[in-house]
Length: 481
Image (cartoon, rainbow, N blue to C red; front, side, top):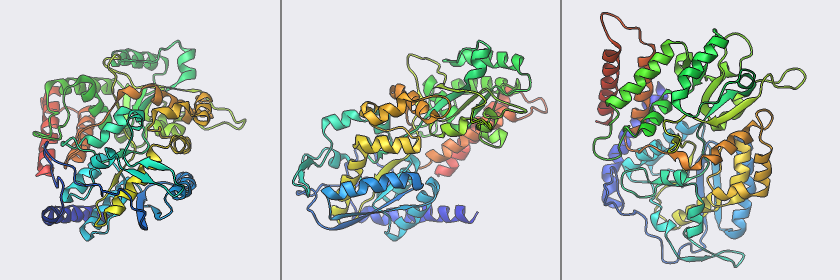
């Protein structure tokens, strides 16, 4: 509760700060419109070689900071006067909360891990640097080894980013670029390949196949819960994307998910739940991977969860070092396999405005170095389980060997990465605005309520669903003010 109150206070202070900040700082400020202009002008000399210290907040554990620490010296061979100081600040929400407080004091870092809703919050004070002018800059910078580079991104570098990941930086309603993709994940379908093969079951590619498959698994194992889906919010949002039915909008009427199409798929999912075909993380009370890896008692045979959590979807080895079953990984089911949609998750990075423009340019050079380096992206992916953001990483010899060794046991992270890379054209991101995180929370709660509520007093399923949708919209609109 204490942490929650401090976050609310920081947000209120951000709103206050935004009023004064907009008067002295160029840029879109809160709620920029379609005609907003980039808020950072690149100095004529680009980076002038001056000594600057760049502070970077992230959530990396020791395995990932080891990778980062191997690449900072390589960056400093090119730019010795740029000192990088990086700090792990708990989890993603801890990074958000600390920065929200620091913005009110003007002590925010130069670079930070972020999710879109975090950036929408920071934008209340207009302190996130738009990257457009940096990305498009043709200024030539001379490095310490007398080589040169263009300050911005070349056409080839832009084209190398996986499109869905790159476009996440422009989901804030004004078509400006606020973030660069750092490492990504998505949702995938984990399935018990040993069980599927033994019983002649086919991995579903469409949602139309899911109900019959769950019914068949129930006949084979009546005590099972065939499917576990970790995130109710992701499920709801992904179905909106696959149907094209509307979830949220960055401009105008933000909360557009209350419609007949969305109510219909929620009703169908309720029927599956009531038949005992599925559970979710909130309903089950733990990650559904717990059911999936179980070898005793109630089990599931399919689990939809993060591609970065593949090792948690693998059962423990027995005393002989063998896995009780082989795990298969596939893309999540689709409504239309010819137009697939899968959610883009995982951290991006944003750059904060500073009085000294050289700090912003130096921050950009470091972000560019990490996000366009095939070698860094390959090593970071192999250490983290996240997916690299560059297409060309797939051709890197070391990474190719990593992916070629993919299997459903000892190299399950590689198998997960392989599936993610094969569906790189599928990724989508939701619009980000002040209130988008509330919408996410509310649709997750909506789905949970509609699945589990016992009807009473003459209430119909349609009554329940109508009420849940209306409550969710009301909560979103109240939160957004």
